[in-house]
Length: 396
Image (tube, rainbow, N blue to C red):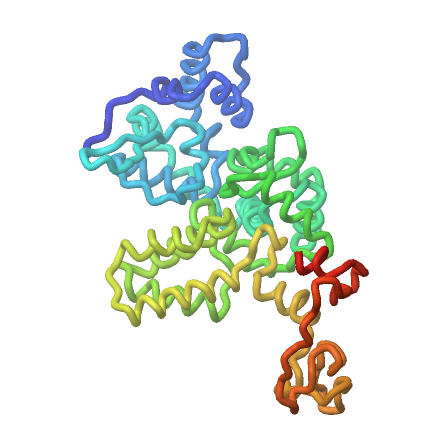
């Protein structure tokens, strides 16, 4: 598929005026908001093309790599992003979508931006260090949000300083302000609450978290936080269940990279409460499995979902919550199998539990044959104890 000839201004015009104003604000480009949409888009496009650094400085390392790929191979490519996530390049409007004859979605970039960045993006990337404090801190903040789902600024400050004691409040706010992606994660721009870019329903997740006041947030290592901070494919913490699931996926997919991408997508879909049957149905369409291998995949999937951090559990896994909070409260099973107790007996020394004392006057003696009940006359007192005649009570 050839690159469509679309100017950057026309691509930006695909968004609303509010989208353009937000984009200019996040890129720290001063444009009069009183301008109409078309001249506003033209001015914004002109500034970006004249000085691409206003754009490049705002991108994460993963976004820089993606933009680099677009510049050196501008041919539209099939979208492999998370279905619940729009990255900064897309939300800005500098990468847009088209569909081919099979109705498959493709993303492409403006030819003007390609021409402008051909000689600029490589020197810029060469001047940057992906392990620098700037990129590492951005990735840490993104990782915290992907692990916990929703955090307010005070929680973010506390968690971030546990790993970087010199990450002061001013530096944290500057880190948010200098990253287009992190700015877009602030909920409603006013609450000082930030959410994962993959989260679909802020209110539902927050309500679920607040419904568990006694549940303590899980602690993660710095390596786990950074692994979950990738812009496109955040990875959950590694454990036996995730390794086994990845092993099975890798056997049936084209590459280990495809398996990692699938693990990342499933983690985010599970966090958004997408039903297991829908996820498994989509997953199994991509390859053919016999009955035994399908059962193996489903079992590994269930183990995987029980051992990944969940937003509604404050970063804990379902397995951890069961072991720490639910299992200790379970009633113990009897030490020996239940046997029919002797009349009037209580739980014995072997721990056999009796639901209530045995009363032969009510239930009869199990060692004697049953005798038919005495016939009740219509005018006799009712056997239920109401005091009324049988014919006016239970015999009515």
